Image (tube, rainbow, N blue to C red; front, side, top):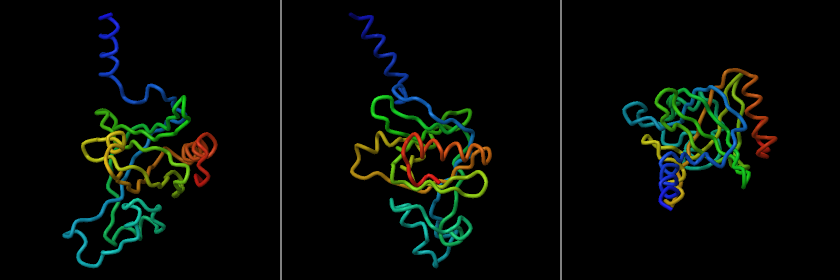
Length: 181
């Protein structure tokens, strides 16, 4: 009766969308997002930056971070926290979720697409394209209702080579992402 309805309402209020998912990887990291510099910051020259297609939903920019910067694009720090790779218990679908340490603001919430390239950078970073979480923290769940989902390039620095290897290994082995090298 009424007790059951009350309990359901309470659980809806606390619903994070992660109830049916298991965490298959967890690691401390810092997250950056590739953003277009404002006109003042970049001058006239940067109409076609080597990451323009990444921001528009294409593949990961092939240029190194150093050459991407200075051509109208720069890495903007999003914050530090713990990134989770979640797997849905029924569907097996993977998802990357990251919340800012302390305030728990959503920084990253993107499905793990089997075709996405997860690129090893240096000793501890990984670069990939994912669903853009806007500054208000609106997740792809809301974006799914919209006509188009905005994609962007992310760079994630983990604690070291061991965590980098583990992250890529989980994507490759558990979620069948062939390009997680």
